[in-house]
Image 1 (cartoon, rainbow, N blue to C red):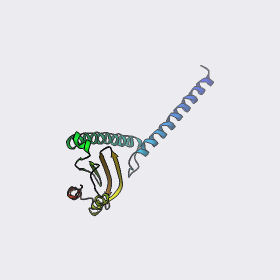
Image 2 (cartoon, rainbow, N blue to C red):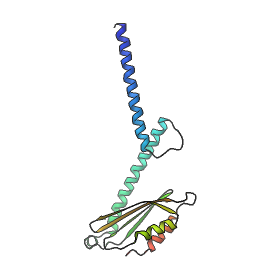
Image 3 (cartoon, rainbow, N blue to C red):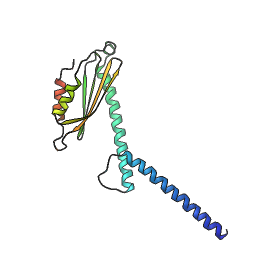
Length: 170
């Protein structure tokens, strides 16, 4: 092989490798932007490990939520209740470290004041981040996401649960 073609081949390989590394850097950057913020600067292998842990946790959480949905539908909704809209209210509270998720499922004939639910959350140390309301046929689905207003104090999730259960949603 002539000397000129060897150096051309080597330069070509170097260029291909440089482009591959550049593409990997872009892909890693996109992946890391999807992750929760990390307090310290970490290496790429550590960040990839963090990404795999996060993805595993999200998959597990998704499966748990699917199972909970199926269980709630099976336990609390009879076909007659769905037909008439007389589904008894179901409140489900999920504690997620310094945040809380409150889910309410009820029939369309159920009357409740969203402000009462939010007031209870705020009185127990939560700051409401978002609330979503969805009306599907004869069911009302409400989901409220909140976090501790003061991270040192946290949210009294047991008290929130008790107070929401006592709240007359009828």
